[in-house]
Length: 155
Figure: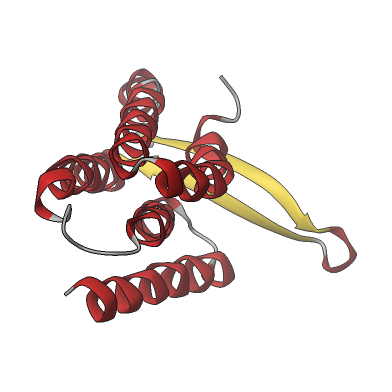
């Protein structure tokens, strides 16, 4: 599949509003949706393993034109280290979502919490798979903002 790494960013980004609105009705369902998204992303990352092992540089690269006027492109890539870091991040996000079902049941505004957790996972995975400085900075900020609000709001 050609757009595997891009899908690992787009799928959770599309799911953020779904997680939020589902969390308004049932926080437990929102946690399960995050779990499903993380499992799907782990499966997508796993499809890059043969390409990493079989390539001479031991990496998998996807390049896209970002700002055609400036002839700018952004590149997403995984090698052995970034792949393992992204999968570990997704497993930890999955674990946090499942653990928070019972741990956070007395807290308020859980829909916001789960939406922020989804944004946090997008930022963290993006930090590990990007090779463009501007996109890295965007993902870094996307990681920092949700973590600030999660820590400030729910401890």
